[in-house]
Length: 274
Image (cartoon, rainbow, N blue to C red; front, side):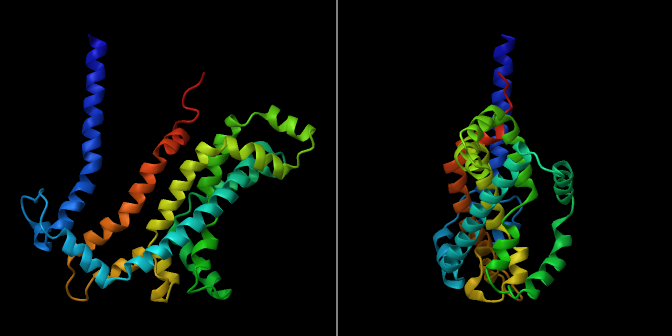
C-alpha cells in the first residue's frame, strides 16, 4: 500500500511540474491571440482570443521574417556542426589521449567557464573589427565554433563510454589517432553529441546580444534581431512581440520533440551502473 501511495505521489508531483513547465507556452499563445490590453488585465485572461491569425499576418508584414528565419537557420546549423566536430575531437583527446600538459590545459579550460560572457564582448568585438569580419556571418560562427562546456561534456562521457581496450586494439591494427576518433569514438559518442547538438543549436538560435553588436546589414539579420522591428519608438504592441516570439520558438520545440529521446539518452548516460 505504501508503495502504491508513493507511486501516486510521484505521479502527482510530476504532473504538477509538467503543468508549471507548459503554462508559459500556453500563456504565450493566449497573449498572442489577445490584444495588448489583455496583458495588463487583472485577473489575467487565460482563454484564447480571436486575433492570433491577424497577428501572425502582421508579423510577416512588418518584419523580414522568412529571410531572417533562413539566416538564423544557416548560422545555428553551421555553428552546431562546427561545435560537434571540434568539441568531440577535443573531448576525445582529453579523455583518451596522453600528452604533455593535458591536466593543466583542462583545468584552464574549466576556468574559462567561470568568466561571464559579457566580459568577452569588447575584446572579441575589437578582434573581429581588426580582421575585418564586422558585418559578416564569420563573426557569429567562428568565435562560437567550440566551447568549454561542450568539450567538458564530451570528455566526461567519453571517459566511461569508450573502453581503452578498443582503442588499443585499433592501434594494433594500424589505425591513426584521427581514424580511431572518426571510426570508433564518434559512433559511441552519439548520445552525448545528440544532446550537445540541440544545446548548441538552441544557444545559437536564441543569441541576441552578439548578432546585435556585429551585424550592421538588415539583410543579414537573424530572427531575434528581425523581431525588434516590432518595437515602436513611442508605442509597442506587445501582443505582436509575443506573437513573433511564439513563431521563433516553434522551430525549437520541433527540434526538441524530434531529438528528445537522444537528449534523454545523453543526459542519463552513466546514471545507472550495472
